[in-house]
Length: 498
Image 1 (tube, rainbow, N blue to C red):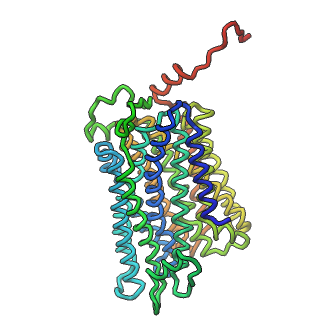
Image 2 (cartoon, rainbow, N blue to C red; image 1 turned 120 degrees about the vertical axis):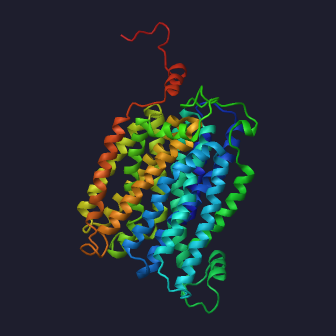
Image 3 (cartoon, rainbow, N blue to C red; image 1 turned 90 degrees about the vertical axis):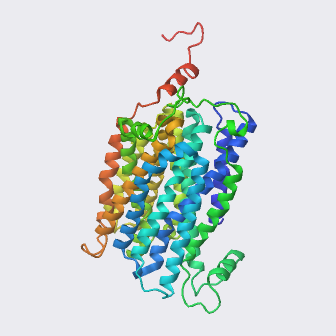
């Protein structure tokens, strides 16, 4: 079976789980209309990922045109911009709504990817002698600014449509959408790079079309710029569908008001200024703890996804060729498993508390990073499996923290601002690891000393577990009240507990 077929089966399964999981007994049309809402929103978010991690795919194709240090600094600049953008776009999306936010994200990221494609074309065809580094620093940072509207927008809309007791499963769906995006970036992105090489052939309609557009007869340069142009075009298609299909709230779609029993319950009539929203974030010890968990998750997440293929290209991984060849698909599958494991464990075993699975998964990541460190140059296959298991666990943590806990504790009124802080911390961690791992593995410091790569990740996994343990028992007050009123099981009449 092809990788696309496997991903399609996963998508169908996720949709089936969505319709099966209905603890609040919503009617069929509500479930269907909510699906029509989140599916295009989610697929737009997935293709934003394709337009984000295509830089990693392009890096290997660039060869000597982009060193480890250069790549690390470019990625760090972009993720740094992403991390601090929430100060602007978090409160903004809380005001304008998630629908407008996702449209801004798709349009801006599409235009930025087009610009990256043009720069790549100019450099690779010799039309300019300017190095890739500084243009990529600027345009990729601009791309990441618009990308940062994506997560806060999808979570903003989600907060209006999903009750707290349903959000663990939606967190799993959120993790799945991220995993699809990683698949599109690494699997489709690498295929685009391979199919647009001058020496490649066309054996199906897709490859024929790609070569007709990007590799005209007589071309002398590999059309690596296609890896930026293709996601830009796809994003524009989803933008049109978003304009048509997305509704901000159930009321906008003709349904009665849905009380989601998050932190905004009973406060929906209140109006918050930008300063009020920022105070809700920065003066909340709980929000800062959630951000701390996500900062460590960002180090682990991109510390694996960003560097494994680069490591495999520079250090031959004999016996792990299958992992390398299907890296995008495996990231997708392991990410889906991790996202659903985190969401289901949270909702089914911990009454929608997000801290317990986050703590458990963080300690699991510590063990897997240790496995990588001890076997980095001995057992390539074991290293690859440990890396994938870290991706599974970190996707579970990320979907619980950014995709769920931010909405729970921020409430519908402040969802975008709070999720912006937490998601921003992911990319602050990504920026830290990008600079550090790029330096540790670069030629300027002991020459490609990859042994430090997994060792660098280990203390962050430990810190994430400790912080998550501190929020083990946290739940919004409205959620506790809802659980006590609706879900506390009373002993049957005449039954004795003795």
